Amino acid sequence: MSNVLVVGGAGYIGSHACLALREAGHEVVVYDNLSTGHREAVLGGVLVDGDVRDVEKLKEALRNYRVAVVMHFAALISVADSVSNPIAYYEANVEGTLSLLSAMVDVGVEVMVFSSTAAVYGKPDYSPMCEDHPTRPLNAYGESKLAIERAFPHYERAYGLKISKLRYFNASGADSKGRLGEVHDPETHLIPRAFNAVLGGAPLEIFGEEYSTPDGTCLRDFVHVTDLADAHVRVLRHLQDGGESGVYNVGTGSAYSVREVIQMVERVTGQRVPTISSPRRIGDPSSLLAASDRIQNELGWMPIHSDLQEIVESAWRWHQTGWHGSATGDAG
Ligand code: UFG
Image (tube, rainbow, N blue to C red; front, side, top):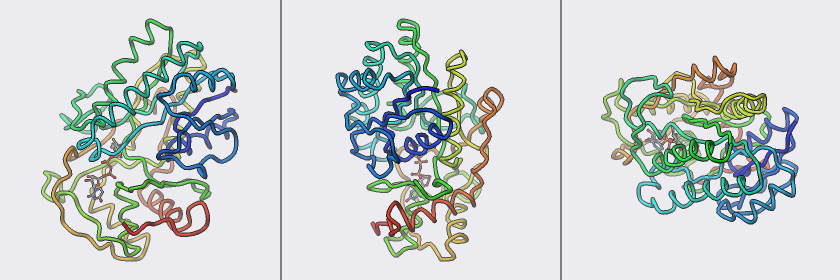
């Protein structure tokens, strides 16, 4: 088993990956500047408080903890925010990853598992989309991740690195034992925002109701964060067993519309979600649906927790309790 540096390990997906890595017997060192991550999400082990653009600090962490493998989750992730503030997205996501790669090359750490996104695809030519679907991002977030994906083969060839990329579809849900869950500030994601509306916050805005989809709202492929975490452990094992680096979609192949998700939130909470109609959000593709055959066939991954009801139930339990057993739902 290895020492894994989890960059962005105090964030939503990174913290769940830390749990899965520990359960698989790895030693985990979290590297996070806590700008969007949370100290409470680091459930034991070491936390190095550092910025992903700080090459010297990264090198120190890689050396001090005899790191064999890096998992890189640290990124800005809001599609809408990336449209109005692309500088921040290129700096954090592109410059940040280049710094991390420089540190790895200097210290001689050769393996990375990288968080990419379905946002690299853009408007689907066909659906579900496999990894060979053309990449034409609709927003700076997707572009920033794609720019880095394109840099990787050069680093792999020149420096002997192995880097696998996981293109997540819509990460959602929370740890089944209630140890971790989603906490973003501001919260932009559909399911927690629907909870906030149920709990008396502002009504949920439905961004666009005239897409060319069956009910007019966008379609998304929701994948449970615990299944995503398991995908990382499998990809890491594959690389360490001498497997080739690769790119993998991680989604379920089932699409739900915004309206269907709202209905599920109503069923799980037993309360009505107050909604208002809003214009389309710039940068939103109408549909994102994964073909994840590659990771299923090559690595035996299955989305075992990603039934929409299980996703919403686990997220709702977490939303009501959080880390401290008190409500985390801000009413904003
Ligand atoms: N939506 C609303 N109202 C809201 C919030 C969201 O109608 O208050 C809609 C969005 O317009 C979209 C859908 O719900 O159609 C899902 O939106 P999210 O913000 O929850 O998620 P995104 O699909 O925009 O993005 C997420 C991740 C990205 C990732 C993408 C890939 O945040 O990092 O999934 O599928 F790229």
